[in-house]
Length: 178
Image 1 (cartoon, rainbow, N blue to C red):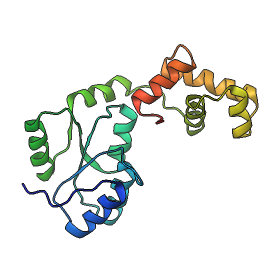
Image 2 (cartoon, helix red, strand yellow):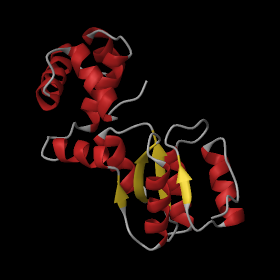
Image 3 (spheres, rainbow, N blue to C red):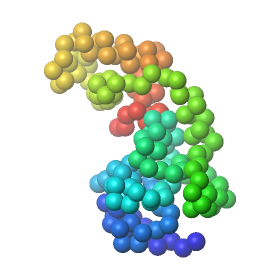
Image 4 (cartoon, helix red, strand yellow):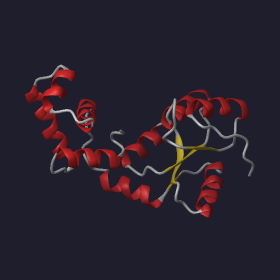
């Protein structure tokens, strides 16, 4: 195996991919300028057969789902053993897909959960930003009652006890980011 390039952000990752066309790309999700998800989508739009392995600290099921939809062929956590990384690189090169065990467990745990609607995600993101219902309503051009209804639905879907718990769950699962 030979390392052909390293990128410090998503835009560089795309440029290096165009230049070097590596057999396998290791991609982090949290990068400046362009996220790993956006970089993967851009790479796969130009190079549909690109084989990308996500190597990140984020195990949230929603984040994993986004990465897989963007074209990731494998999803590993940075704490993975070196042997697991090498085995995954070889497997993806051979055309296989791989998920770390703890990532698969997260997906299995939330497989049947109702997904939050885009509006509910927006409301949760604003709640995470410290906004009260009245502020959320004003910023989203909604009534306060509609915001309360969205929050009730969010709490129910996430199995959360309160707004703070919902934000914590949303961050852990990768539904929202700060």
